[in-house]
Image (cartoon, rainbow, N blue to C red; front, side, top):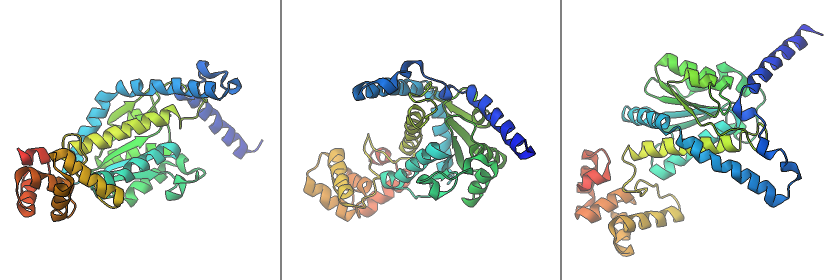
Length: 312
């Protein structure tokens, strides 16, 4: 046996020992027969497992809340929310990041998603990219990480070197850091300032963390970005008043939002939107206060963009 082979075996043995301690890598006793069930039986088994996810997320709302408060503070200072992960975790972070600009009319630099292996890894796995801590550091340097940013490392198992390297570097710079994982005692939970660990249990298919673990991560990231935007003045009541109208559907949605917020007719909403350059928030304020666009914009500016306060 060559020295190189022995080294690889030793490394693999250590990794196997780590995997053996992870809840998400365990075998699920309730799905041992999933390969012999009919289609409806398979789907029922998967659905039964999925039902557990929301309860696991509910248990970590206090930790999610701490992360939201940190993100809101970062936004106020001009900082960013930066997600980083590998594989499924990285893709979920990117998905949440790219949805923020059209939903809340924010810059695409305000919420950033990083994935091990770069953009190409969104579509196809890049071999070895997640195994290097230095790659995580390099990607954060590429986006010019500063102490005002919040970095959230996402890894179902909580041991991805790419994420570990990134979190350690972010800590060195003085960033607030958080981790999103599904395994108690995960390495990234010990590194991050805020540890969010939704224990969803073993997957329906052993080790396929794109399933329950991925669903939990998606729910948590939805909560992180949405709650942070709510507390940044991007929502009025439960309406997306800062939605960016960039296609026919969104132009129609802007009209609907103005109508819902003011109980006005379509032609009134349309007229106000045209005067407000299709800024739904501004159009709503104009209708509810009777102010012109310029005066209404001053009201919004004086209330940090919070529509309810501007109306009051």
